[in-house]
View 1 (tube, helix red, strand yellow):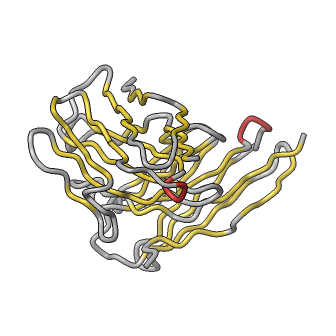
View 2: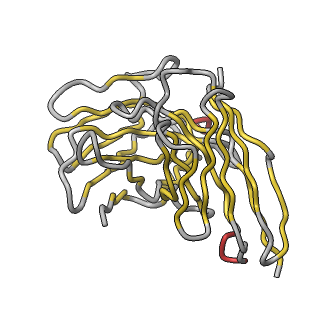
View 3: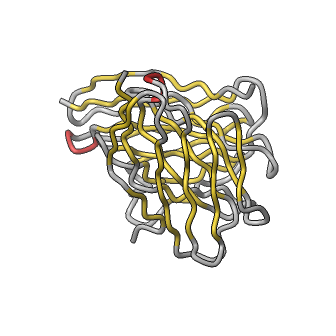
Length: 115
Length: 112
């Protein structure tokens, strides 16, 4: 079945540095990918919709300059957390679908810890 | 504003029992209702999904019941097994945009 791969699975960085998270669709082309954030024991909150070849669409309250999204190809979207701070520590999850009739598949998430 | 309300927050069921999780939505434009299963440290995995044109969908031990007039849908896990212990999320969206709104999640613990 469709697989979405996310890398890295865990990352620890120092406050003020930037971290890049990759999301790849392994066996299908994804024109649209979504990035979610999940705090411990809480639900998934949609951060942004990533569209191949165009600018991402951010949800209300999400800082686009802090969470840079690039969807340069049909199989890869990246999320860069810039100038990370401890409050950015969270579980970041991407998802992708092949087309409008296909289900949404999620990656295994990236645990970001900012010290 | 949470567009999908999910209950209970957690439940404990004996092996072989039935787990029931309920969700309610507000946005009448929603026409796609999936359920996801999530294990600790992993991303959600699609379990089963339903469209409003049917009132029930069954896949193995998992059944979705859908009540369009009440704007409610539920997940039933029959013959619950310890391996079913996980957090379950209901979600809703318009079918053509997949911008899922998730419920708060239900942690299910199945005791052997």
